[in-house]
Each structure stands twice: as structure tokens, then as C-alpha cells.
Image 1 (cartoon, rainbow, N blue to C red):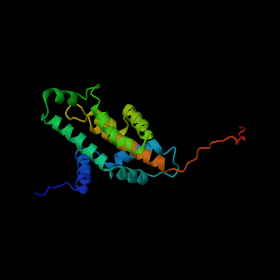
Image 2: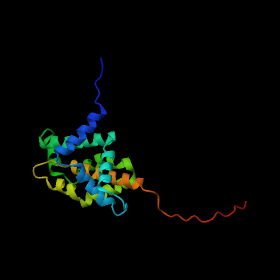
Image 3: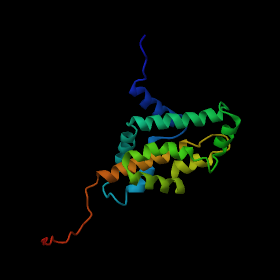
Length: 179
């Protein structure tokens, strides 16, 4: 008996499809990335931001988080989960928190700066994140708004990590040790 496995290209294409089906474009995510990073990276272009969003989406754990979160949103909209869970998800209950936990798998790919970027975006809700957050009356966007924020935060972190080190650290001269 042979097992059928899902090929990685299917995960990636499904991630892009789900984002598009939910009204999210890579360009909208890249706009948030640009707004986060342009004051730190003089030569940053929108194309750089788009390329970095695509690079983040190459990671399998990112694809898994996108698919899982968006499909939970869709299942809640269709009433395919328990009434209690559907209610929590449709209202994006403030203390639910599982949506943020899932998206940590995206932001953690690029270190602690990803987490701080995500926290900032989750509070501010710029661009498409705010639009998704405000569409609660007829759609479940509990996971997707955080997924988009996490993708933007991770792409911005990836850009930050790619910059040359410019911190000046002064190290005092070594004194001889006397034993």
C-alpha cells in the first residue's frame, strides 16, 4: 500500500489561493511592509517588499499557518464547527487568542523583531489588516487579519535582517590581567 503525499507546491499554491479568495493581495501586504521599513532602508522599493513577502511564503510552516487559519475562518462562516466555537470566531472574541498563537509560527521565523513588528501591527491595524478586522458582520476574519499582519511583520523583519550592521559598539581596550 502506498501513501499519497501532498506536494509542497500544492501547499504554496493553496496559500496564495486562500489569500486571494479572502480579498488579500500580496501588494497590500507589501504596502504595510514598505510603511514599516522605508524609514530604515533608504533604497527600499515596493518590489523589494513584494519579493520579501513571497520569500516568507516559501516557508512550509508559514503555508501551514495560512491554510489552517483561513480554513478555520471559512468553517466558522459555514457553521461547520460547534455553535460555541462558531460564536467565538464570528465575533473575534477578544480573549480567544488562538489566532495570535497560530500566527506566531509565521513571525518567529525571523526572530524577535518579527514579534515586535507583529505586536505593533496588531495594535495599529493598518491597511488591509484594518479592513479585514472591520468586516466582522458577515465574514469570519478572526485568523486572516492576524495572518496578514504576521506575513507583513515577517517580511519587514527579513528586510531588517538583510541590512548591513551599522551599530557602533565601543569596546574599551583590554587591560593586562595580573594574577
